[in-house]
Length: 275
Image: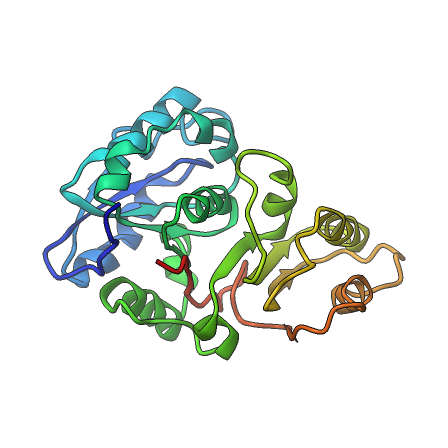
C-alpha cells in the first residue's frame, strides 16, 4: 500500500464534480488560486456537465472520478462542490490503482461519502473548502488548505485532532451510511460532525441513531463544527442541548463551535488514518 505524499510546486491536480452541478466560469475563476500556488490544474471530461441537479449522469461522474483515481500523474483530486450524488457511484469504483499509489482527495459535505470510504481503506483525506467556495473564503481559511496540501504535518489547532485518529464529516451523510458498506469505525477515534439546514428534531434523530449504532460508545472525543441554519421549529432543544443529552453517560471530551463546515469560516481538517 502506497503512502500519500504532500504536494509540491509543479504537481498536476484534477478538479472533478462527483456530486452537484457547478457554474463553469465560477470554477475556472476559483481554481486560478491553485495555479497561483504553483499547481498544474486539469479538469475532468465531465466536470462541467449538468444533469438536473447533478454534475452529469452517474456513469459520467463515475468515469471522471475513476480517471482521477487511476492516473498516477495526478497528485491530488479536488471535488468542485458537494450537494448530492456520490452515494450513487461509490460502489462502482475500482480502488486497485489508487491503493498502489494513493493521492490526496479534498472536499467536504457530500464528499463525506468518499472520506468514509478512504478511512475504511486506510487512507488519509482532507476535509476542506472546495473551489465553488474559494471566492467567499478568508485568506486564513485558504492558507489552512495550502498548508495541508504542501505540508505533511498540518492539522487544525485542536489537541484532540493532533493526538488521535479523526473520522467524520457531514452528520446527515454519516447517518445515511449507517449499517452500509460505507459505514465508518469510530472506536478509539475522534468523531467530527457538522451540518446545515436541518430541523433540530432531525439532528436529535441522527444523534440517537449514532448512539444506537454504537458510534458514540468508545470515542476519544466528539467535535462539533458549524451547525448552520438549524430550524428549531418548537422542538425545544438547541444542537448543544441535544448532544449533551445524547452523550450524558460518556466521559470523553466534547468540543463545540469549531470553525469547520458550511460557512465562510471553514478551516481545513485532516481526516487521519494512523498508518
